[in-house]
Length: 325
Image 1 (spheres, helix red, strand yellow):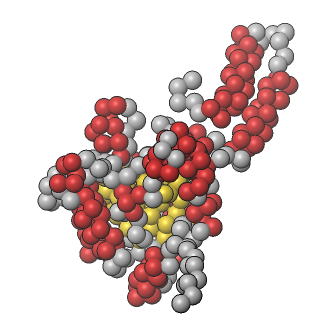
Image 2 (cartoon, rainbow, N blue to C red; image 1 turned 135 degrees about the vertical axis):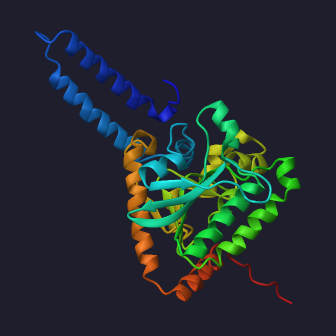
Image 3 (cartoon, rainbow, N blue to C red; image 1 turned 90 degrees about the vertical axis):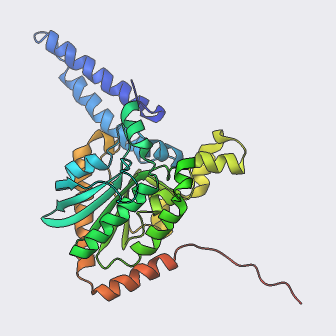
């Protein structure tokens, strides 16, 4: 089966057996009683799914975060938001289709939504630059954030990128400066802000729209300073060591929550968000509304102070004692 991950195969085999039994029962409605067997296999599918997905390794969660059928930003705009009206261009250089954004509603509230967007097929992936934004994408995001700030609208960002685009053109148009300006300006926005990591949260490409009052992450998404493959190439000189790197980087949702790098983990449907996109969208909507209500209840000055303190406090380290004189 296309897009089937290795650890999903036992579930796929059971579901195929289930489909065969149902086809058999439909073809021979009289004299063939397979109801008991169907119920037994249905229960086995649920049991096997729970066993597999409750014991995933960090690398397996990275694979799920990259699943080709996983919901992307535009899918969540359909399932979590309503009345989305897209805005285009950075008013400086060009339109970047790897970064989408515009006005929307969630739970009756007007908000500004901005997110990185991948493509599913080759043509769409090229159009979206595989979800890796150019400088104009980050400048468009900042333009929309300033617009939201002007009209007092909360800002919601959806993160799903392997990283900002590292090509020559992006460097010529100052990708690092564009991201750096976003980091500074997002710290000063005078409206509640929430980021949701829905898939890959790669390096500065993710952080460029991720300096917010709350950072939420889906159960099978990841957030990291570098991809497991990149880390493996640097530390072990072998990209095949990516599973080992994923373990060492502590990039899974639960690791990030324990380290204080994210504020909440949003549960996914059994089998991953790609199995039930509408249910995943509902979970994202509920989490955003819950955190948004809490943020809107706080005085603005307190919100800004806490946002600054939150990012200043990130990171853990130990210092060796100074050598004796």
